Amino acid sequence: MRQLNVYGRAVAACWSVQTEMFKHVFLTGPPGVGKTTLVQKACEALVSSGVGVEGFYTEEVREGGRRVGFDVVTVTGERSHLSRIRDAAGSSHGRREYTVGQYVVDLPSFENLAIPLFRNVGSADGGSRKVFVIDEIGKMELFSQSFIRAVRQTLESSSCTILGTIPTPKGKPLGLVEEVRSSRDVKVFTVSKENRNDILQDILATLQSCLKRTS
Image (cartoon, helix red, strand yellow):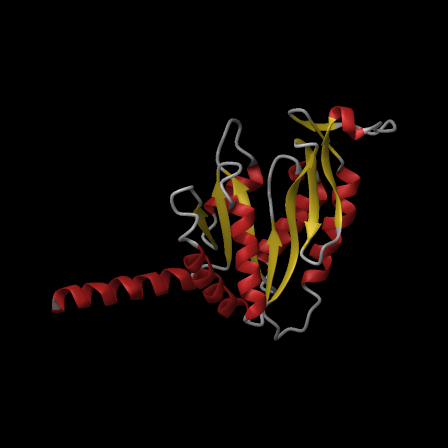
């Protein structure tokens, strides 16, 4: 029994050392598994404990039960188009058209809402603890070079901890996604239908450890 207790303490100490190495937390998993829901639950818990939260989520948009696109929504409730299916997107007015499958990405709309959030994240008081939500770093968002630069700068910054989502590997690797996945500063949680109801506390524990590094 004593050996088991020693082993348990050793595992706990190892987990503590590992979590102290990380600056950011990202969730990955297949579409629809519940990554955004977990991010939102984590943010609710963080706000309740006095942690400042900024950033954005991606939400699907449905009309008549049919998915017609995605919106980017800030944690304060501001909303703007990210993409729409082609017959609902309207004219591009001569702009270059960016598409992912049947969806046309509205790059100006996305950038006008999302990019200023990155500029503001480092402007808070130096002593405040803050989590910055990036949901997600995916194909649609990566059409924006401004977004890519902003994410890289925020990853390297000590002003906040990122809570983000990335897709699972599929097809051609996405450069920034793989940078995040392989970064020593990032703890990646893989969300599945089997663990999505039990993983929240681990995510929150890791975030709290990350916040100690950035505070």
